[in-house]
Length: 457
Image (spheres, rainbow, N blue to C red):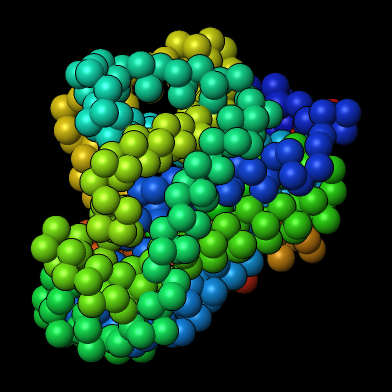
């Protein structure tokens, strides 16, 4: 059955592009929002971790940092740039832009409604770990803090990207200052670090040390898997930019530079600890492994570390707001008739339940599913953008077969590690599969027809 313009879903027909008078430069939206995500301690604390002795440092500091550069550039060029450009050019959110890839009917579910639902998994993880850190310092039960944290994050996210960016402007300076403090105490012994120190098991790892390709794949899996959802959300974040230059500059600063600073500093800190005989002994004694967060008491002592960890928990708030903002945009778009305070409120309540119950404590499981879902989405969107001549083609009728086939096959690849089946750099592999399959399906005539959409200013 054909879809006519008058039969487009209400979430499409009611969408209005963001006006130029509401646009702002990159340093007020894209850069601070993304930087706030990467400064979240849950991201950088395990940057040096990887399966096997030595983790990401098993082949030396230089190779670990080079692998990180590759991961950062892939996040920017493959997962963010096209969504960001689409958002800026159209002024429309992901859930409208995505209908050219997944169809007018299919776009409601993918990436629309699904994106909003999965964001509450992120919010649950953030709420869980941040509240536990806060409860270790202030005399308030963690369960109470989880309720307060989840409600506040949902409220700020509902207010919009400008408020998320405001929250992200100053709080991220806290983890940046702590990373610099740790680096200042350990940089002097980075040159003394030898992979043999940690590959021999001093860092608590087990199994075989990773090869160079293994280290690269592990870093790609870690960084890109964490970023995949935020990459697709680049549509929503960058639609408030003024032009293409803002999209690119904001991405280079907020994504590439932020990854290199946060994860790169974390790697250097861990290397510096194990390059110092005394600090290495403390790290082994405290079972810190390759975790940069656990290096805080090792390097700075327990008393100061307690308050710094508390500060890092507070600084995690922008990441919680970001998740709520993306969820709010999803529900406002796909469920325009429902008051967003109700839809987001229900989602926030679910996040709080996941946190209080402890389910959200299994962050690897949550992020694994989210990463597997959005690798093929970004791959299919990139090819759709290129096939359309570098523009948004408009919604397609029904469920666009090319998009759904590409997503399904890409998801199968991306989810393999969750099923204990080896797949190097699974998020990147899922992206590649999604992109290739979408291209092949498009050439095979499996694109549903375009549906004219009434122009709005």
